[in-house]
Image (cartoon, rainbow, N blue to C red; front, side, top):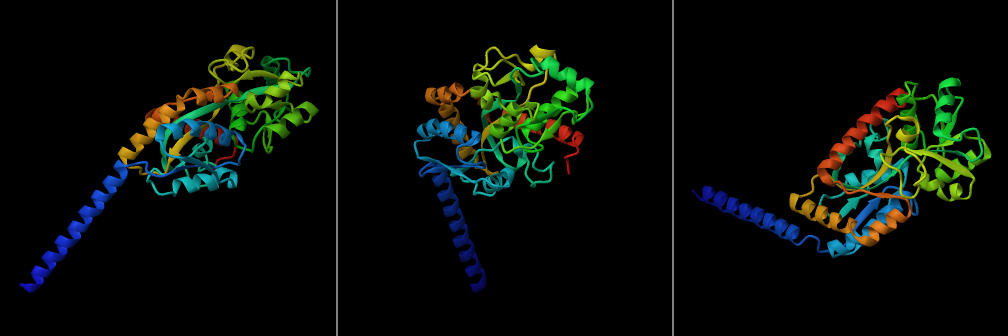
Length: 329
């Protein structure tokens, strides 16, 4: 009798404690956010992702009503920072800037990370690839490049702009596939980024730069390189005279590097809803839009559902190309 009574009292106490804890958690979420929010950028300070996220953070901070701090966690070709995002507490106070690499980390055997490893909030910007050659060289337009791809032995033409398997590698591999050519028709030479790759193009060591035209803008304006086409659905505002791939050769091939707002998986629904609403409001801020567009960056806000669909489709495209390139593990 006494034992049953003690058990009953204990159950009541533990049950009450659980209810109190649950109520406290609900209250904490109801007050979200009540302290600063951190966005982890998996790449170095001053780079493209860092720049885009810091512009976005200006509007996001206004909308959230609390300070938003951008923290760089570079290393491991993006694996370090993305892992930190995926493993952070899903409370809304640590968010991340997931980039296109989450679509193929696992395919390349770099990390067990996929789009499903994150709570995807929305893309915030994209930068289409382009095909850029030395000004005054043998490639006056994209047609000349395609003719060379078809007539010269595989590996004769060279391109660069990122590491092996990166988005700029996929851009030229996909263009080859759209011509019914092997994905590795153009030999891709890895580089530490756009600047050194463009220097190699100007020096004649590399035939093509397949990174974002934004990185080539100043050199193009100086007449040292020529942007032949962009892998976008529409011409870029920063390059109104440069045709899309479809306009240049009649092939509908598009590919962009993209940048997003994401979170650790398992965000409470009410917290996620507040982040989505504040993100959309902050992204629409006139200052944010102006800062991105002035630099040739295309602002995007597609929200959780459409972003998830996009990321999964992108992962499928990347997996196919990486397999064709012999880079899938």
